[in-house]
Length: 489
Image 1 (cartoon, rainbow, N blue to C red):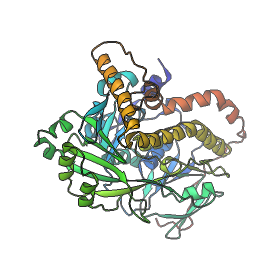
Image 2 (cartoon, rainbow, N blue to C red):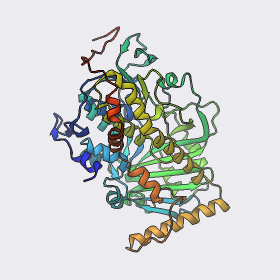
Image 3 (cartoon, helix red, strand yellow):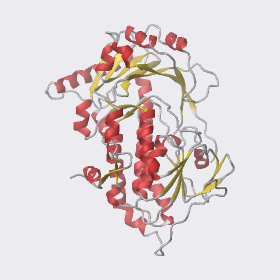
Image 4 (spheres, rainbow, N blue to C red):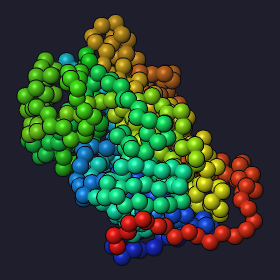
């Protein structure tokens, strides 16, 4: 049995009060002998995942969320096998199956005539290849599932905006004036991260990509009433229409009840802000895609309202860990992803899994900094490579009609024909490495989807664990009680 399979099987499963299954423990039953008081800043997907994993590792977790309530925000999101394997290990398989749509294929199409130039089968093939499914989800549903998993194991405080951080104590100061002290701070506060400024030494300026994205949800029943649009629901594929200067992604979510649209287009705003919730103009959206094929026009005619998300890029940070070794970043706060590869939430959840696994070994506060640097060493290259892979798709999808676009389409068609041969039971005859359809590139898919965050952490510990444990003094230290300078409870 390989290490990944062993990790999945280890640990008994119990029924919690809500009736859902949760693992009694992860990490081969290992829990930290010294429970730390850890503050996680941000209650998004990454923050909740980090809280859950660190709590399962035996630590005391408080999440600080700036918003006054946990709301139903966002639209479509993807849970590829590298994420699904972790979520199922955490006992969340039934919830994933309930809220998700199991993607059957990726279909890459021409903007002008709806021709399928690229096609990659997923579905059962992904299950067979990587052992775990590929789901399409609504972000709010995904967030709810993680919230319900984490909430019994940690203290979640809303209306708790962090306005300053002292990484050396470490402590955070809230907008209310309250100061909260802890052993460790995890900055999971997203692309507009406050904590990132303390790690990099000041404000970092995002770089405009030149793109923005309209986002919209359409009731699937409306597509089912149109013969041209019905297959978009029934086939359960992710559809990407590629065009000059932009592309559109469409797929079903919420058990095929809604159709999610993300429409990339040139950013014509001046002084715009980086926001998920900025209102867009439907008429302007329709005008942007004037001349695109009939299927696209019919879809856009069904859009009731839209949001317009200005896409900003950031260079990889030199470090995710503050020099004092008591503050580390996670997810979008340290490696924000452009949405062209749909791996942003995946990287945050992988980060969380590695953190939890490593800190299940913690037996002394002297190990905090080494464990944080271990987390960075395990995760940095993978997250940075995924950032670059995401950016690459922008240039692949947005080519203007001409020789480069024709060469791209020729590559994608060749990969599609090869996939169809394999589907018929024949042997692959085409080299897919470096193909313009990155999902058809088996080497890239193995790297992206075959990754097991827990396994990587376990392998690191086998090589380095004894040396790190030797750093801890032999005197046994009692757990420290989390303190607040102005507790309101």
